[in-house]
Length: 199
Image 1: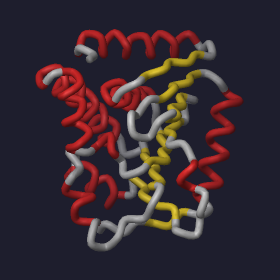
Image 2 (image 1 turned 45 degrees about the horizontal axis):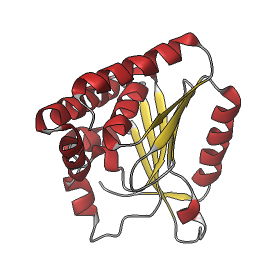
Image 3 (image 1 turned 180 degrees about the vertical axis):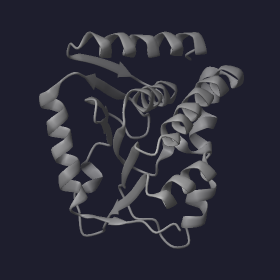
Image 4 (image 1 turned 90 degrees about the vertical axis):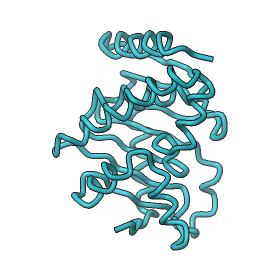
């Protein structure tokens, strides 16, 4: 269980590593750290690229787990910091969030996909404006289940999941070669992705 104080110390360690300009790796094992890395990416970047399952970091179920892990009060603080960073990120129209989902959303599931987003109104507004780009891999890509989920930024912050269920991951900063490898993987996945129509 991580307290909000410990999560804030983790955020500062990310910031120190990023500012150092040196290659750095930070391992994390739970959702509260996942949310904090995403918050850090939002605070330090203009363009973010995600390959994920169902965008769980923005879901009610994800927030519930964080509150169970950290306790209700501290969990709420952890998530509120991330939501505030997302709102700040999207308040700047030059900033963009590009998302590829592992699977397309069936027509009868689209309502739930939207309603389960904690930041539903903010997300949908940004989607309509083109600030958020939402795509999904088609069924013709048979090997996608074996791909690790990842997020990277234009500022060379990379988070790659080790376990899709537990949300354990490694966050790497200031490693240009690794950054370009992940960027190439995303570019290749984009060739197989199709737009998700929510609006």
